[in-house]
Amino acid sequence: MSATAAAPPTGALPGVRDTPRGAGTIGQTRAGFGLLTPFLVLYLAFLIGPALYGLLMSFFDGSSVRSGLGPFAGFGNYTEALTSSDFWSSMWHTVLFTLLTTPPLVLVALALAMLTDRIRRGRWFFRLVFFAPYVMPVTCVGLVFTWMYVPQTGLFATWLDALGLPAPAWLADPNWAMIAVALMTVWWTIGFNFVLYLAGLQDIPRELYEAAAVDGAGPGAQWRRITVPLLSRTTALVTMLQTIASLKVFDQIYLLTVGGPNYSTRPVIEYIYDVGFTDFRTGYGAAASMLYFVVILAVSAVWFAISRRRA
Image (cartoon, rainbow, N blue to C red; front, side, top):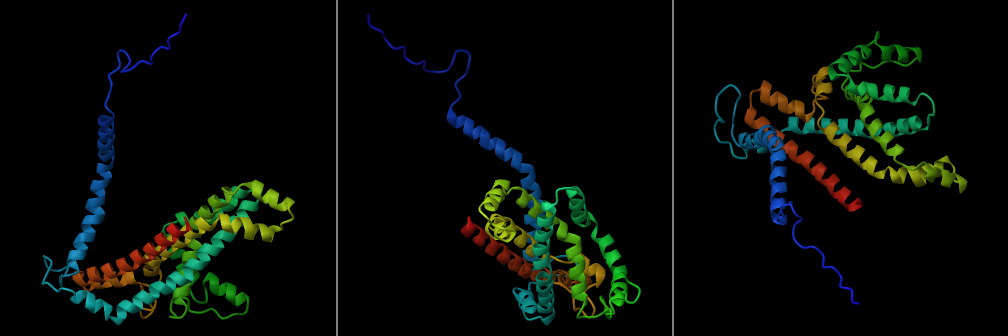
């Protein structure tokens, strides 16, 4: 008696239509484009379109008090911006603000996240306290700090007087105005970086610390050998996001000092606002915007290159 193996069934099952593989792929592609279309339309209408129109405006001597693009200026607006001492002065103020705010907003946020992560009871309270200022409107924060910076009667003046130290004219002294804005910014925005670091710390397995403790590693060695390496990607992300956010500073400086005293705190974006909406030179303002866009794009490209190398 010989046994014959049954051949596997071929073709579609009874009652089920066989769909070609290519047709399924085309259908998925169409569905993907259909889902992306609303976002793509908004992206083109409110980001790409205005950016291209701004690039076009930068080559004309346009004004907001007359219609049309105005006379063709070529690269004249770019040449004027690159040779303007006011443009470079505002660029330096932006860089100075970035240098004053980025290191503390990274290091202090990391320290606060590590302290909160080690607390066993009442952790939610410290999360709330450190993150709550970030959700406050900048107008409220600016108003509160304006009162705190008032000479002689402000809260900072009272604290320094209790310590026997003279209180500076925070917002009226060109040497202290940018520091005062940086202090307010650190207090106001540190909660965002704090949350990012706290999430990174909670992703580190506790078994690593327990194994290191068994091997005799102290808290300092655990921090150097475990915490810092495993938080390196979070630190890179926080540093780059904070750098770009600081380079885009405008609102808190405008509320506290309006760029003063004597333009000592005016950032690039306020300079662009002044020439575009106060001096009505929209073409020149568009050229200054494009130059600053290149700077931010270069910073982003450096971060992208570093991230790809570390990956």
